[in-house]
Every structure is written in structure tokens, then in C-alpha cells.
Image (cartoon, rainbow, N blue to C red):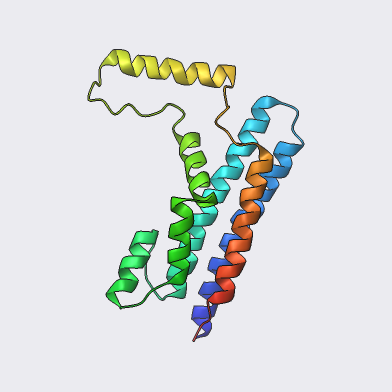
Length: 175
């Protein structure tokens, strides 16, 4: 029992740590006068918010006694379904991931990773690749970051996430 509590505490600490790093990145963005540094700090904050989500999934996995190294909501839901269990935490996270601040965080995270929208056509010619490369360079040089949420929005997402985590943890009671 003591081992399980220590692991659960580690998981909660990791989730809290990611939220803390997000807060630090937002503070740095708020005090930055340079557009490039501002963008870098905002992207860092988004990465930490996404990391918070991943850490929370690990926390949930450990809470339910699942042995998953990189759990997803679908993985946790399937494993619990196999045991005929339902997780209100997973259901809530799924709702927010489809429509809510988690969906916004996921979109922002994907935009940070992939600055150029993916082309769904089957044309993989060299000219298409060259054009995409040029677009990335132009985007970085001109700092066209209109898609990037500002630090106030990121702070709001962080606060919403913090409140959600506190609510979910309050509902999770170890037997």
C-alpha cells in the first residue's frame, strides 16, 4: 500500500510540475519585449500544458492500477472496459478533448509542432516539398504567429486545467 501511495504521489507531483513550468513560461512571455522570445515562451507554455495532460493520463492510469507507460484516454477506457469499470475522469477528459479547453490546447500544440498545414493530396513531388520548406522559413523569418494564442489565453487554459485536476483528484478516492 505504501508503494502505491508513493507512485501515486510521484504522478501527482509530475502533473503539478508541468503546470508550474507552464506558469513560469507564461511569466517569461509576459515580461518579454522581444517578439521571438515571446513566441518561444508561449510555445513552451503550450508544450507544458500538453505535457500536463500526458502526466494526468499517467496519474489516472496509476490510480486505476493499470500498467501503461504511455497511456491515452482510449487505452485507459479500453483497459477499464475489460474490467467492466467506468471512469468518470476519463469521460470528463474526453468531453473536454472533443470540445473545450483541452481541444484548444491540442490544436495549439499541433500548430506548434506542424507550422505548415499538412497537404492531404497524394502529390509528393519535390516542388511541393520545396514550397513547404520555403513557407516554413518565411513563417519563422516574418514571425507570422497569428495562430499562436497569447499568454493571457494560455494562462486561462492553465487555470482551467488546474481547476479540473483539483476536481478530478477530489473525486478519486483510493480504497
